[in-house]
Image (cartoon, rainbow over all chains, first blue to last red; front, side):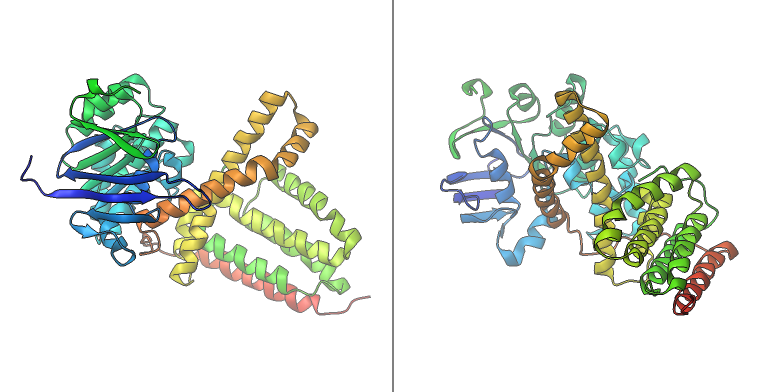
Length: 228
Length: 222
C-alpha cells in the first residue's frame, strides 16, 4: 500500500471549539492512503467527531489538512467536499428532503448528474443498502437504523474518494452491524470511521488509531494493542 | 401536519390558491364592518377549497380562537379576526398537502431559487421539529407522570430549557450538513405537470374571492 496516493493528510492539526479553553484536537498528524480503512477509536469526548469535522472543513483548524492532494482552505472547500462522503452521528440531521429517493439522488445532482440517471443510481444504492423498499418513504417515518442506512446511501452514492463516518454502527442491532461492517470492508473508498465499538472496527478496518484527550496515542494495525 | 387526503387539484394549484387567499386576508381592511364580515368568509373559502375535514376545521377554529383571544382584549377584534383568518388559511393549506406534496408544490412556485430552497428547508425542518416536540412531550409525560392539561403546561415550561437548546443544536448540525452536501448550489428539479381545468379553477376561484374580499372590505357598512 506504500505506493498508493494519500487521500487524507493531517500535519500538526489542532482544533478548538469556540468558547472552549482547551483543544478538542491537539497537534494531530496522520496520513491515510487510497482505499485504506481506518478506525478512529476513543472514548466519548476524546475528539473523534472533532477530527472528522475538521477533515471536512466543518470546524476551523490550525495546521494543515490535505484531502486528496487539495489543501483544505476556504477557497477549496467545495472542491474538497465533492471528494468526501460524510455521515453524521445523528443521521436525521443530514436528511434534507421529504422523500428518501430525492435525498439520496440529491448527492448526485449536486455533482452535475442528470435527474433520471441520479434517481436510477440512487435506487440501486438503496437496494444495496437493504432499504430499496423505502425509496418513496418520508425520512420522518423511519427507524433510527433505517435513517442511518438512508444517510449512508446519500454519503456513498457519489463514490467519494474519502468517507468520514461518525459512529455508523451506533444504535444498529447485531445483524445490522455485521451487514454494515461487511459492506464497509468491501467498499473501495478510503474510510475514516469514528467508533468505540472494537468488534465493529476489527470487522471493517485494517488500521486503528486511538485518540485520548484530542491526541493520537496509538496508530497500529493490531487491534489487540488497543484497550478502551 | 395532518395526514393529507385525496384532492383532485394539483398541490401547486392548491398552494397558489392558499397563498392568494392569504394575501386577500392580509390586504383586506379589518377596520370596517364589511371587513369583519369578509375575513371569516375568506377563511371559510380556504377550508372549503382545501377540503379540510370537519373535525380538523373545528379544532383549528377552537385553537385559533383561544390563541387570538388575548389580541381581542389587548388590540382589537378586527386585528384578532385578521390574524385568526390568516392563520386558518395558512394552516388549512399546509395541512391539506402533506410533506411531499408541499415540497413538490414549493419547488414549482414562481419565486427566486434561494427563497424556494429556504422555504423547502423550513417546511422540512418544521416537520422534523414537530416530531421532536412530540417525543419531548412523551418523555415528559412518562418521566413526570403527567398528562392532559398539566402535561401541556409542563411541556410549555420545558420549551426554553429543553426544546430550545435542542432546536439550536439541531440547527447547527443541519447547517453543517447543508454545507457538506452542497445544499443551495442547485434547486432540485421539479417533475413536469400538466394543469387541468380544476387547477385553474382553484387558482382563479381563489383570486376571485381574494379580490372580492379586498374590494368589499373597503366598503363602510353600518
